[in-house]
Image 1: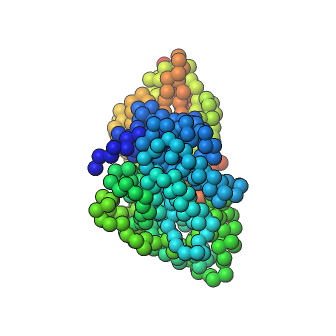
Image 2: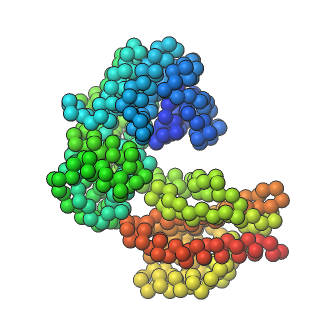
Image 3: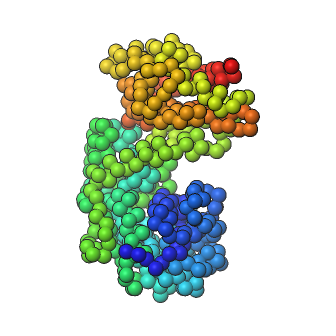
Length: 480
């Protein structure tokens, strides 16, 4: 279906759903104007044709400036992470948005709200539904999509599930873990959001959307654990109130403490679709929970594979700098060195790594680790490499497999040794004037507590080896 609404204002473009929606819209040829408080935080390819404008839904004048000339507008913001009264902030933002849209002649508003019914809804869900009511005061047709849990790498709900399952082999679970929900995969949600521009309805409408399955948080955690190869024991108890369990959640998953506590208060009531959308209204065929989680994990791997780790992790890692951090579930050590030679010479020792050349530092430790791997049934160091210099994607180098190779620029290796998780090692070389920057990144995706224990147990040794390896590679690059 073609849509006459081609010029789109998108709020929340730096958020989880909004950021993915931005790409989906531009890929389908829509002209998108992204309203963001900090345009410099909007990481988008210039070729997408995205117009970034500075604005804030709490400041009506900035909304009016941004909405002029737009056919449709997405309202994709909320204040749940604020330390202030998020209900009042959401109320002000929604009213400003409605007034500005009416003033600028916007033809349609699309809003993502939350599933749930009844007078005892949590403040979070009540606020989400009040926002929809306020947007409709504009008199402009509003398409409101009400969704439950969103399954996708980066989604708050999904990341809470991941953190709990990865960190707690035994869980004392409150009653809300058994409450039913109807999760939706992020890709299905994006399809609904995009198709909301294309449906022919000229009136406001509320659509309840969800995936194929009705499951509880407990069932979601068990399915995630199954796909990650983890064994988890859940012991239900009736005494953990949402308030107490939210405090417990803040201890286990501190990164999501503020918003997570507010979200937990919404889990006392089921969030399932009670009024299904007529089949002909949307083309989306929502997938089930098993497929949604599998897709989330697979897409996460693809996104990491397409990302320059050293750039995406932190722009603050300068030359001759080191940074260690956690990115999602992955533990990362990245470092760089500047060498006074061209990129071809700087990459030369990297292309020779492994096999008879060795790993440039503490080769006896690499051999010892390979021997230990053989003892537990792994591949060890015995495979070597096919050629002392030539590399092809897919070939083995000692206990690594070449995942990506760009001659003179990039080598990414995936570990095939026995590990409580997955590991990668990447080298990149960039020309900078008459010198070159060698970047070395080690990444580990731990499987549960055993994986975390392994990483931190060997981390002091990794620091020594990674530092020595990069220093020796940089020194070797200067030899002619």
